[in-house]
Image (cartoon, rainbow, N blue to C red; front, side, top):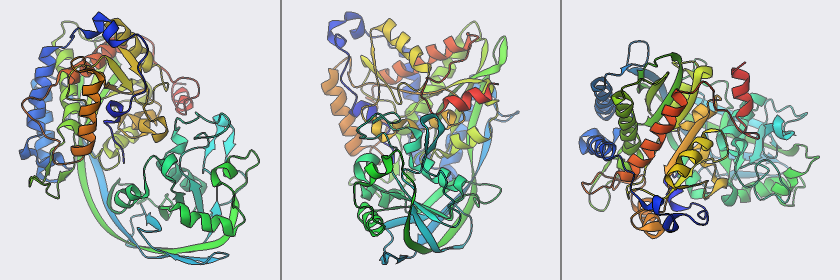
Length: 546
């Protein structure tokens, strides 16, 4: 669902006067030792012997053992009460829905994969949603800081809510929420969570290509088949019976039957909007196949010298897609050299640099390699809900994911720029080196919610997802955009994402070194960075710090 290389592909226009007009910006600042270390780690992690680093099985065992041994070589302490591992209990649910029968004002039999997709997180063999009244609940958002509540005065127990993708701000005529920049209230995961909090029996998101930032074919491929979830003590019975999507055409017919014929987004943006009963019911049966297993996060710590009970946390996901359909060259191993052997290698290089310093940082440094990112950010979600170190003592999360392989750049990209004070640390470091800092190229896609840093943000910890940009020191934007497009077209989530001896890891070292310097600065400060006004995570952090 995410394309983590996107900052390379579509970064907004550069700030005037940078790059070629600044001699300092063109000078190499590469830590060649870091670049060499990163390259060596990628060569191992993206080797065929790792079997694509998919959770469970021999690929996971080899990968986490390699990371553990590298932590030991550096002299880092086990990060989880004497262990380098944090077990992550997972359940694989393969949901198969039957036709969805709509009866009442509108009558139809919707076809799975064609008109709708549906699944359940409930760990049961079979499940029936029967004659559940359908309600149009606008955007399905409850956002007190924006004075917005689509569920106000609505009792949805036993009912199924239809909600719009993205949030009210997207392409709105007036300024709402963050405008075209998606807030977490626009993310599909939030829609499911809020509907469950409200007690709905089912939640179905109305797909629209522009506000979703992807077509219906992505829904068909990404929301059907086997899905991994974190195990829960209540077997996910706290979630809605059914979670799914419906095509815009099918939704329009349901809304029209209830008298909503105008643009559904404009209708839901009205200040006096109230949820609308659609005078129809939905019924669908789902059968499940369940499989239980455990994966592992890998965690190590460098204890601080004076404030060792405060923590700077670096993260990267070690997993990739394993083995699958062979490509045209017969390669069936998805090695994930960029995604995300590069991030793991960069964090290991940062760890080595911290260890090599004569003076220890005052705060403790935690290095966390998480599992099952490709399955829905599950390893970081588990840590966020089962933290080894107190979240209100965790100063910041610095995440590394899918770093470019075409060398240093004159610009940097922050996914979700404007969320928290860590942006200011990047800006200061960039200014000292003559670099510029950009935000999302496509802010409406919700990129900030699509990598592991998000699960730290979600529990209030200021989190940074920074990448090198697209203006290569050697080759300029022409090279950077060309290489980025090549990656997206031929390598992303493909067997071709391989290590190669000519790989240029200088840009990876650039990103790692920036985050090393930011982590060092944070570790020797006494203050805590916060969230900027308007961030949906600000209140969570402030509450936890009381």
